[in-house]
Image (tube, rainbow, N blue to C red):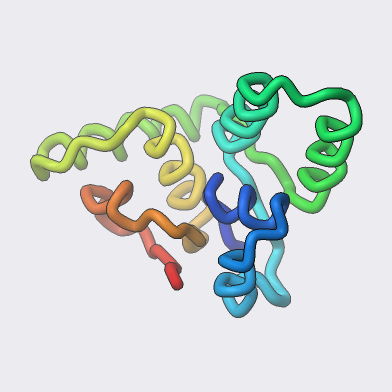
Length: 131
């Protein structure tokens, strides 16, 4: 079974039952789903900013259990450094949070499923699956 890294926006669509989530089903079906720790952090911040209560936070927790989370270690830090360095050299700087997500996909040698391919335009070697 092959793996994919799922970007924050796609996880959000799934959680909210947004119709755009269906566009990504062909990329997700039959795959192992991975998240960068950064996506988890972004979603936690999202819940705090919207002042979710226990019920919605528990729903998010249940949703996130569908994913394997990759946490930062020395290897992932190297991938992040390489990702940001190459993007800057290409004249297409990448947001640090997006760089963590891209680095996760590169470290796993897995494609990234996203609705925001422009966020990753400066990342060489990254396979992006977009609908």
